[in-house]
Image 1 (spheres, helix red, strand yellow):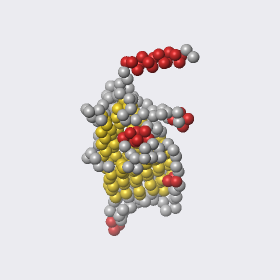
Image 2: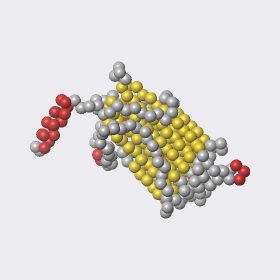
Image 3: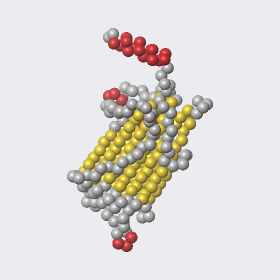
Image 4: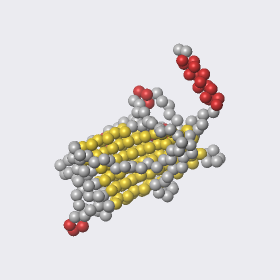
Length: 274
């Protein structure tokens, strides 16, 4: 992997993912927040499915990237959301896209947004029930290092819902990404008035970083091309929390020429004779 983030390095890193994980603590857990990842699909195309594969399969794959014969562009969406029981909602999301211009060159665009909204207040203007549990403890996930994709969920408390999801899909139709903010905004941060809830996202030379911090825990997503890592982490130490991390990579593929189709047909016929 290259040590700097560019559209080629990002896809090489992100193309390995295709998994999801969820955790629900105690009984009566609420459903996780619905995260809308706005990536257009081919209207008349068949439904796309994702098959999770093991490390032994991924280890044998060389991958493709923007600019290679197969992949002509991509759209990457990342989003993290935390809903607390007092109505506070922390959200961080971003979109990175790359496509060929009429001159055949790869061009990229990035947009980000972050917000902390809502919330009920108790007497004296102090926030109401955050759902944080001072006796709950969730720690250690930050120190886990995986060469590939990692999804870690640590939950201490009752009636919590946490979800990590990562998805790849393919299409040969033109992609028109829906930016989360004005183009060319590589970073965004937000917090409430007391600084107890923070949301941030950044696309930079070291990769992609998303982080939500609340009195009841932490949610992060990291894409690090230099180490070949995609990491999603949830740490929930409280009650009645709804948290979700989501990542989606949409790859645009070129039409396969007739000559290549014939070559594949001959190859398959020879393989069937074995």
